[in-house]
Structure formats: structure tokens, C-alpha cells
Length: 434
Ligand code: URA
Image: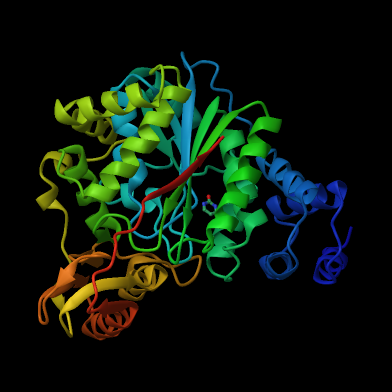
């Protein structure tokens, strides 16, 4: 098999065989295919797509590119959760301690920022000392002991996805249905959970902009999961504006902590409760989603979810005093208001543009080797449907370089449309599949 021939085959719109996909993934994982050829393949797939069989083959090849984790040593039903990625999506950080405080076993593998979206692993590294590279032994022991562990992709689990994820991030090949489905499902299958709850985003800040495409993606992932004997459910949720108010690593961690304290933004709290209720039902901790929701609310109200978060940060080597004292996190040096140019109702916030503002400020990677600035980002004060007076703050920008601050401010203002007529608020949960 020559990689050149496979690139040409896909470039010409032909389907790859199971053997070709297996060979390509094995060779790429062991370093026998250079990034420049794999980038060309990703771009060919981006334009030509993959059929159902190719997507399944790619998922299985990536899932088996390393070890398949057995979670049999963890007692109870193990439930994982994954989002297709969005702007201001700090869901896992609030959700996992909530469901763990309800008694669910959460063994979760997360990723770094991708394209214009942030990643849980980068956010967790805001805690000094937090180790996202724990061994699988540590991972399993921690889930057994405290009910929750989150690790980044190791060299052992779905290494092909780890390499492809980083490559797609910097080659504009993220937002393709088969590549997203195989990326998510390969690591979920390799990580060994019995049940998986997916948060599939739709809207301008999502990789799937149109709701029909998000539904197709969700159905594809549910099907892959079912073929592998896993219980998979998917929530289709709004990403036509940022989730919550905070966008940017440390700012989002602080908002997740506020939410665990019961003071989170309404939309974000609603999403956490919806996903939490499904996870508890899938894990047989709650008899149905309604009971699950009440359980999630209770552990927020009685403080046990926050305590679980502290326990989790500590178990992975992080400084848990930042959970009770989030003001200890470092701040950006420039904190500036973005003022509304006129009065009216916020009609639209072009969501991926807000993610790009955060990238411009330094919150995302330009190349695979780039490091990110955890302190920068934006805090929105007005969301779609809100009224704003001329000169009132639309958002606060957190930056460390004046030039970048200026560019991001202009871009943010260009992304917001203000109408003189009232505008209705977005519906957060569109539908649930599976
Ligand atoms: N999340 C993933 O893990 N992979 C993708 O491709 C997109 C979102």
C-alpha cells in the first residue's frame, strides 16, 4: 500500500477498503506515514467524505491503534460523556463531579482545544500541578476510590486519534462528519465505558452548523456505539451563541466552579442537568431522567458536588485550594469592556467568531507545538434576546497584548448584531437521540 495511491483514490472520490484504512492507520500510528501526507488525506476526506462502512472502519482502526482499556475492575456501570466541541463549553468540569457525587462511576478521556473550540484537558491544566497524563492504573484506581477521573489521550489509548486530532486542529480539517464521529467514538470505545452520553452541538459555534447535520452525526455515533455493544444517547444542543458567559480556559474553570456553587449561568446549568440526568439513568443510578435531574440538583444544593470536584482535583495532583478560592487563578494584564455601539436587543452573536477571538488572544494553538495562554478570553454580559443600552458593556475582554486585544475587540463587535425589535431567546436543548 502506497500512501500516495490512497490519497489519490480518495481525492478522486472513491471509497477506501477496510484493509486500506487499517494499513493507513497502523502505518501513521507507528510513524511510517509523514504528517504532510496524512494532512493531504484529511483534506481529501474533508472534500470527498466517507461512506458509513469507511467511517466504521476508520473508527475501529483508530480504537484498536493502541490498547483497549478494560474497566472490569471498576464496580458498577461506567458512563462516559463527550461533546462534539463548542465555544464556552466547560460542561465536563461541572458535570463529572455532579454525577460522581450522585454515585456514578465516571471514567472519562478528554481532549485539548480543537479549531475554534476549547478542550477540557487544557482547562484542567489551569490548576497548578494537575496531571492529565495519569497512567491507566491510576485512572482505574481513582475511579474506584472517588468515582471520577479524567485523563488525556495517552500513547496507549487510541494513539491514532491523538495524532490525527492534533493534525486536524492545525490543517482546517476538523469539521467533517466522518472524521468527528471516528475521532470521538474511537476514544470512547478504547476507554471502555459501558454507556456513553454525547453532547452534539449545532449552530455557528459548532462543527456541525446545521441541525440536520448534527442529527446525522449523532445517529452515526449512536449506531457505531450500538454495533460495539455500548449504550449511547445523544443530546443535540444549541451552539449558536457561546455556552454560559465565559470563553477562555481559566475564565471557564471559574464559571464551572460558580456552577458547582449553584450560581452558574442559566443555560449552562440547564445543559449540565440535562446531561447529568441522562448519565444517571444510563448508569442505573436513577430510575429515569426526571429522578436523575433531581439528584443532580440536590448535590449542587448541598455542596457535595463541589466537594467532589475538590477531591478530584487533589486526586490528580492539582492544587484544590483554587476550587474554594478561584480568585487565586492568575489574571490577564489587560481587562477591558467592549461597549455596545447602540441600544437594542442582541439578535445574533456569531459564535465561532467568539471562539476565534479567544484564539487570537492566545487561548488556542496556531501550530501543534504552540503553547496556550490560560488567562485570556472573554466574559459575555449580554446574550441573544437581552436588551443593551448604548455604551453598556457587551463583554469584558481579558488579554495580555494590546494589539491582540484591539483585533479581538473589533472582531467581537463585528460578530454581534443588535436589533431595535425584541428577539426571542435560543432553545438550548433541541432533541435527544438514542
Ligand atoms: N471532539 C473530538 O474528540 N474529536 C473531534 O473530531 C471533534 C470533537
